[in-house]
Image (cartoon, rainbow over all chains, first blue to last red; front, side, top):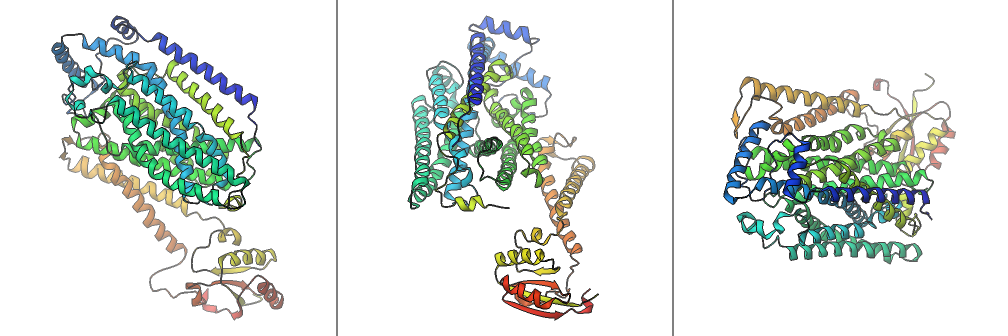
Length: 459
Length: 179
């Protein structure tokens, strides 16, 4: 039996407190009037025209024809676009837009971190279900670690749900399609109201979360019951519900990614977005399993886990990183090549305003794991797995950051106190929930009929 | 030197074969060769063979392929005959790189795969129409054969092999023209 050490508990609580303070600071320093927002930007920048495309009531079809346009000319083009609109609405559109972006900033910092850690738990749950449904022989030694990580899914997803509900109550402008003002002036969003409306959105979210949490609850229950059982009926039940869950998961995960991430940019769409988010959560989940396993092993637990298990997790980290890159590139290249204005604006924003995080995450999520984890022997060395794992996890945090921030805060992004605070808060909560759950049951799933095979697993 | 005789022991299961190889080597007998109908996982380690270096070669071949692809595309699409495709005039390799990535990837795989196969053939001294060296055609079906060098210890070795579960044991004179 693992006991949750006080040191780790205190560490997680300190992380949460620091994170909470950071987030509070972010919310308190957000501007409340247009003048304040203008003053903040004037202080920090040199008054350049804003280049972000929020998709508000802009006409996104204008001025994005030339991908190779330099930064200056694109900025000028959008500036002109802007002036036109400001005239149309007869108001200081720029200032108000800026205010919304700066007000969104702490919310977006909160949302990115909340989503990221929820995504880790969900990816782990999918990996766990795949192992159960495939009756994998190598992994039962890791089941209790996976079950521990998935314990974070319900609290994590509920926090995300609360943030979404608060958006629905117009406390922030993360999802501009929730604003009836915007919808009234936007023909494209008006056409999507059948799907993108607040009650439906929240209802769907409850179904996703309910389904995932129900599967997780029963699977954990059967898994623990199997330890005491004389037959393998619990194992069989777990096999059946896992297979069913995977069907439910791939549909709900896809729709979740449209709802919770893609709809932040309601004009833009990508048909493989669900897969893309799935690859991201899958590799993050597997990496977290590897990190937690290595941590527990270093403390003298999990004596049944050997180098070959770590090697297999390393192979998954490597393979799914490549899979993620494949999907990232498939999405990027088609949109880049066809250069259709309403699609390509998504990447123009990211390349112009998010150059470092956008290409930086590609290095962290693809080139680094590719070179580090390519060698078979390195995948058996804990040090390499931990190093690659930390970079992969931070890289996928950046991936979520890149998915959400550009539409939420435009070019006003910064990894500052609020962003680090959000990460730290959810990191602390994640550690707390996960290790508490791990300490609740024996780390060895002794009743699993495949445990013997897992114990002898040798590559 | 002392002997040009070998023993051929036949097995009908890969797990039996693996444990047999381990116990034969424990008794300090020299295994010349093992013939199997399919790759047996862990056999190379059990035989104490030096680790293969083909993965290192694969990496280098892949790098060569990547380089060739970049140079080729740069020459064809940028230097020699730039074309305006989809409103993207090709005057810079870097700016047009996304379009070349599939080719770069394919050439990497192509070079790595083909050169690896050729390397494998060269190292194993295989070429078209080569006579099979395989001593027993059953090893192309479902049996495993271990060839062990004999040094005046026939009896002892045979009883050991019987214990390890060999289904057939034969003493064979090694042909001189083999090597």
